[in-house]
Image 1 (cartoon, one colour):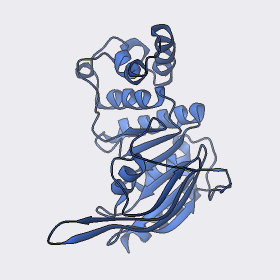
Image 2 (image 1 turned 90 degrees about the vertical axis):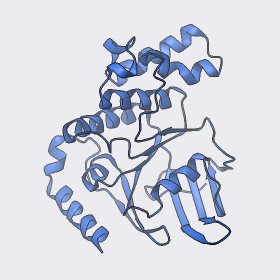
Image 3 (image 1 turned 30 degrees about the vertical axis):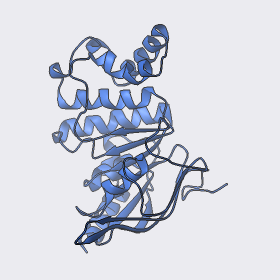
Image 4 (image 1 turned 120 degrees about the vertical axis):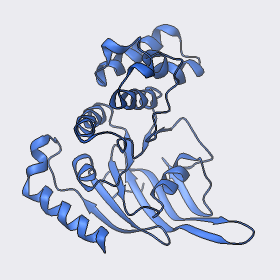
Length: 258
């Protein structure tokens, strides 16, 4: 069985992945020769300049786009389009405006024919986890941006995916809300132990959340370096003040600059 860089059994194995967009007049190589092993329960973040293929890689992982070359395996099985084993959270909130918070969380369960009482049990658990129990009957228009994103995360996790894919989910939030959301996400991940692949432009966010960071370069998109994050497993606001946090932030910023 393949191992990830963190030493745990691999949940996702990417080998020789390439993606080329072709039209009648031109072609654009978005990804070249990506090799990556991501462990069960690992929190991995991709960072890199705009246009380096981070979102393309995530969309191929989600099965929303096909790779041109290479393979992606989840627990040893090739992916074939979108699947229930992968949940996705985007920067836009993607909630159903006509459904309540609880109904949004239960949406996938209802589609899959899960009985009402079991759906209620699951949504109760996630309402507690994302700290929105008083808002179970609220509609998305009554929620702040951070609250909407918490619901989107809960909805994705309620279906028990093996992998949670997150494309700059906090990119549209103000700095204070963003930090609150990072802490909530870590608390939820700590309890759920889902494999997370996270995209951000924010180096500090990547360091605070991740066990491992992969830096991507552009033209074509490729992984240029990997970094284990040498921080305590339990992250608090004080974590951001640690010398090793500051040093790694400086090193990653220099790497991205060049």
